[in-house]
Structure formats: C-alpha cells, structure tokens
Length: 271
Image (cartoon, rainbow, N blue to C red; front, side, top):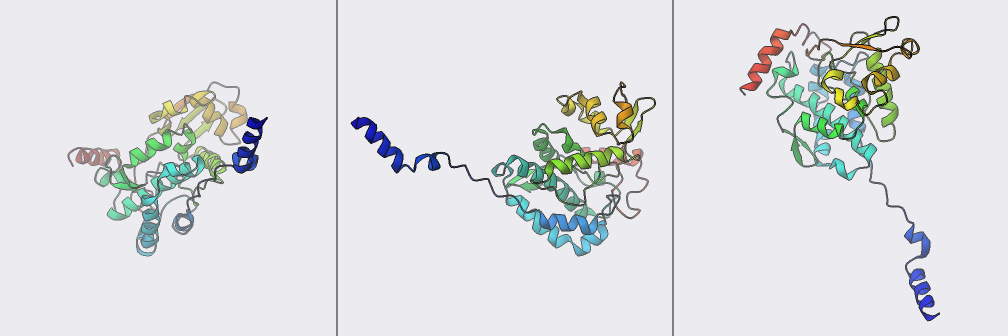
C-alpha cells in the first residue's frame, strides 16, 4: 500500500495525464509572403517571368527572401513546411541565378547551372540538383510539376508561393494545369495516346510507387475532357522535345535551338 501511495504521489507531482499527453509543439511555419508577392507581380498568366523589371524593381526583395532561406534548416520544419520551402527555394534560387546573368537565352548559357553547389539553404551550400534530390526523397511525384528550371518547357511557375497549409491542393492544381497545357502535354482520348513532357521520362522511376505507375499518374491528372475516355484504355506514352529557351516574357530565349543547347552544354563541360 505504501509503495502504491508513493507511485501515486510521484504521478501527481509530475503533472498527471495532462503533462504526459501534452503534444509536442508544431515547428513554426516559414513565411513565404515576400516570394508570394514577387510571383504575383512579375509572373504573368502564361507563367512567364518579367526578368528585366524584376531585376530593376524586385531584386532587393528577392535577395532578402533568399537570405531567410539560406538561414533556415528544412529539417527543422514539419514535413509539409519542408516540402513547401524546398519547392519555393528551388524556384526562387533559379530566378535569382538567371537575374545574375540576365539577359541570357537559356539557363544553360550560365556557368554550370544545375550541378554547382553555390546556393545556400539551411547554412549549407547546395546545387539546384541537390535541392531537387531532397524533394525527391519525399516520394511525392507531384513535385516535378512544381519545380521550375527557367525553361519554356518547364511546368507552370505558380503565381503564388507554396505553403504548408495548402501544399496538397496546390500540387494537385499545378499538376493538372501542367497536363492541361497543350503546348507542353497533349492527350488523344480516342486513340489513348499521350504526348507528354520528357520530364516524365527523365524521372520515370519517381512515378513507380504511384498507383498504376506513370500511366496511372497521367490518367489521374489528365485534363477533365480527356480523363473519362482514357480510363479504360492502355495509354500509349510518347515524349515531346524540350525547349530550354528562357521562360522570359520578352523575346529573350525565343528560338533557342538544340544546336545552341549543345554548344552551351559542351562549354559547361570545360568550365
């Protein structure tokens, strides 16, 4: 009896069930409001960037946002906040890198754009490819509809920042917008043919865990007018060419050719 009373006293002094069951506080969300305002101001309805005006009027705000990104450890955030931060960081860092060299016809016309570990995130130097790899570890193939590498064939650069609260809705919506853009992806319900971005070929393994794999993903997010007719068909998947011209609102990047891409790629091999 004495032992029982001692245990009861210790339990009471510890705060009882309320303290034991107290939830671990959620990590604070990252504030993306400044990136959100830049996207609304300098990205148009067809998801092109006004780099010239952004360079003159928004560079300081972008640099301020990127300095906060540089100091924030993604692993200190909740999973949803981490995913939103990594997507926004990739896109904002890409825009910032283009601004450093603007005007250029393509991001490939800049020094080693994707593999050089020059960008700071959470106090570490990372490349754009490394940030994308961190996103791929989430196991969510929708991230490929959200990261934008400054090319005309990229998925749409969303005109708002991704946030922890809305990340799933935003990723679903951006994926559908991407697949509904006939300049980037085309579906023929009558024949069951899909001509889609080569991004789906480059990262095909990322869609392996999705129900129905890549075919299931494409059918699920296909345009509303095509999805019902595709449901019962075996999808014939073909891959389009990729336009690496800069996603600029002006003519900068227009007509960037496969030949120019080859020259820039070779230059980057020897840089």
